[in-house]
Length: 107
Length: 167
Image (cartoon, rainbow over all chains, first blue to last red; front, side):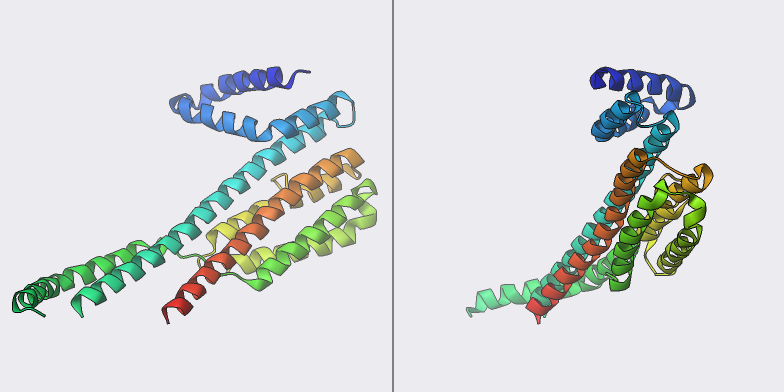
């Protein structure tokens, strides 16, 4: 099976299904679907081959797909946490610079 | 210093003194607005526990080719350890991100670590190929938790280095 073709098919199908429920967020939904499929491409390819070869059942395949979705949620949390750590570090630098500048000029 | 320069210097200083209360107010407001950025500091115990959960969890997952009933007690003990670390993370201040990550991994309804053991219990036995693929997914999820904790360490390290270079 051509994985590019499968990805395109999945994207169209997901847009169609999700578009009915999230019509107001079409742009965001499309971006989410594209991100999910791009990041999962290699795994999707492998799992699809294993499914075709009969080494994974349809249930196994579905479980793995959901695990990939959960992993992406975890990854989003990680990215948010890292941004927060960086901002916290930036805040410390800003405070230090303000204090140094004020002290130098005033005192 | 020339008299004119000295006069200019005094003028600047007087202007700054006049603005000082506003600057201090600005600083206080800045502190208050940044309160939400506080993150729990690096915790050696959390880091070690995350590694321990990863190693033990993946090892136990490897046994899922056997009947669940034969491994029930091991799974029960392991899930208890998992519950302990989730509870520990829950009660640490400013630790929302780590706690949310642990919750996802320990949630039976998500297809990660605890979800795998639920499936094993429901199915009784799992295939080698599926276990290998699921292990990759679980390993990746726990690596994110471990990496996040380690990054807190980097921030601490930078703060300490800044402090040392300033004093």
